[in-house]
Image (spheres, rainbow, N blue to C red):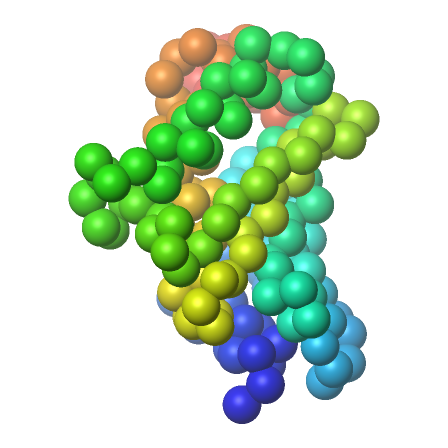
Length: 160
């Protein structure tokens, strides 16, 4: 089975289990495929698989985060810590299997996972778990309450 098809099938499995509010595939059967997921805070996440590079990229995992902000610096440190051997296996992204990179373009924080050993399933599952942790761990610390309320137009008295 082609890797792009496998990525889509794995994301479809998550959608069928109710992880995403909606899911769609775009693109052809070649090396590149795009997937759109409606997920945390009703955001539309665009995931792009590039088979030639063996990367899965989310173009905007966090919106409205200034590149020189403390929040972005702390996010990069948090992301780096996800590959620390001190984390339990189920929370760690094995650096022998995947690498993680983040970019900030105009305030949109992108996240790219590079599959190093051909284990596409591991990469997809880890990226789903990682995005979930961003919203349930990194953002839930209370440090970014004002950002959450402003960015997602939440009621400050009932943000969750």
